[in-house]
Length: 286
Image (cartoon, rainbow, N blue to C red):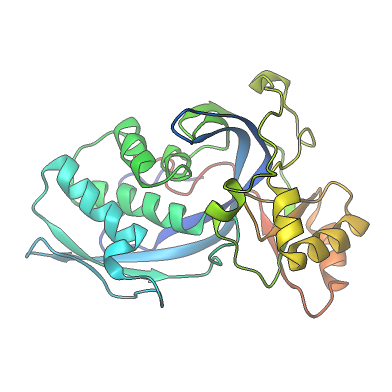
């Protein structure tokens, strides 16, 4: 990947890639209610795209609001305003967001959008915050935001703030998006959620090790997820759900193998292929 530290500017397309959780264990719960997790985040080459235009009035405006989401509640707007406040920045921006990642799909779209806002505007406004500072800001927006700021495929622990970076093998992923929109809070709030999976050491993890503790709850409450996962496992037994759902996925060693399975996908399932990335497209911006 080329070093683009000097190339990003106000005319750039700013990518916000999806992630997959290659496993996701709930290993405990803090007194404040936050769940303690272990997971591996893998970036893939499917992404939302953001554009920014400077504003001299210091305002943050979202030119492409998402239906049903008030602009002031949108993570992109909140991220920009948080950066302004943290850096004492008087500059503004108009944000254009082209959505490609489904909401409620477990691919981290909203968190990735917020992280790209932090990275992009930190660069465009020349606020001078380093990556760890942006990660800390991101954590106040949501548990998945810091990993997108971090920019590396990584073994993550805690509430999403402790990272052990990994080199992952090249893979093509077949991803199915069932007809379901799953609120993350509904899964983590379920009484039946398993919260005591034993901790594993990052050095002991290998591709194929682990499972997704959130999967059983999502499948029991959203039959479309269970159906998609059952179909995919007939072709790829290692298939699992990503995040809190609804998307399910399987890894293949070659694009051709994944394409063969996708061609057999029932017409009522939405599916696509994506290659794993070695790092976030903005990994070298700082």
